[in-house]
Image (tube, rainbow, N blue to C red):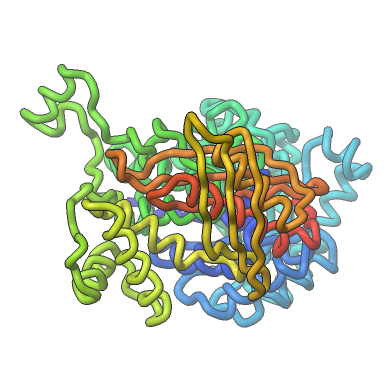
Length: 509
Ligand code: KIV
Ligand code: ZN
């Protein structure tokens, strides 16, 4: 069985989704979880883009062991040196160079001819090889490049020292048959192809990112680049969980597997969704809320007689909690800690545990039944908290058929208590007006979404908002049994992100 390397780019290409910008601490939290998931390579960012991205790549490279940590660079000396600096203390550090090879990019973007681009690629790879033994070269827009030119570039960058050559479908243009033929062509035409790993990186503009990636695995691709929940530029990247589970579910067909610890998938998906504020659609394969829900009577009947009639995957393999009624009002700290351990949260600091326990106690006063999903929501809230400027101290809302909705809110602003009262069309509107006045924010609310985490009227409500200010888009999220409180917290979370992340707008690739 071939082992396919999983190159996770949630922290780089995933972060290029509008509003998914993460701060250093958030990236570090996700990187730790990606290490538990056992990915082979973490692409942690694009260090030249901003000081924050440089720091994130550096901190991840300094801390995470057992996983290759990679940073992206254009084929420019200053980019390559910046990545070299960021990953210099990594156990295994990789420099990833991207340079376009399609005529359309050469003519309009680079304004260079094929020979000049080839020379630039070779020079860049050689420079990077002076800093690390692990260099990846990506032929941007490979699927719209001339196949023979792509073969020439691949051969030459391998000669220059590239250890991985990536063939990206940058604009999500290809289809499985064509892409697998292209990979096959390279495998047969590039004389030194066996000296490097051929990697694939597919975008999802036509909804074919995963299909294209696995079609390439069948032709010998040894690395797949993907993101958690399929987040990424435009329609996103191929989703890690779908690729991994496709290979795992059909071993005889693919004769290939990965090293991924699949039981960490669900938790990773929840964490990424929480931190980026990008909710997962209910019918999303593997990690969507409905991925294992059997609705039709015929299906339910068959499933109850024999699970394999209608279920090809076991939710436990993905680490999906079985909605067990686990703890209640009288459960102590010990039981709470044990349950967290069973859910895979063994490495919390004492301070994180204490805060989470406090929140659990408050929740158990408000909500009779506490499920694993509630615990995951609560703990993810705690460990992903940004260093906040604003925090909610108290909230009082009056609404109903007889009253114009009115909100009185107390915020702590850099440690200083401030209060405001406002009216609105509804209770959320009143709260948001009060927060707006209090913080003086000029941001525009682009999106407001609310959903419940489990069933029942006492379920935790999860709110996601999207704010925009001066072209910088952020998402904020929060959960609470009171949906007005969750709404206030989500707005405040987004404002904290705006203040923290958008001071320097970074360049994407
Ligand atoms: O889509 C793309 O081409 C990229 C490269 C940087 C690999 O993201
Ligand atoms: Zn990409």
